[in-house]
Image (cartoon, rainbow, N blue to C red):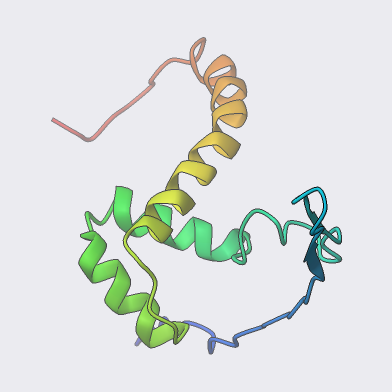
Length: 117
């Protein structure tokens, strides 16, 4: 019996949003229309790239240079090293609440058997 594990093809989904931004000459105040897409003001990346980047950096010990090269091949535009760093920070903030709930469930548990030495 042969096992085969394959990943689904990657499809890039791009939603563009243009915003009008003007500066008042008299007051020197900048006025911009609100973003139409949810989360457009914060980051152009959805939850999946955040998850992938966090996993590769945290558990697979990818360097930022290697993450840049991978994103260049997958997405196309070259990102700075700060891009993946910000993505990891955002993902950590989101998972902090879930971590507390998971620890509450795990702490009273006990190990019945373990094969690790």
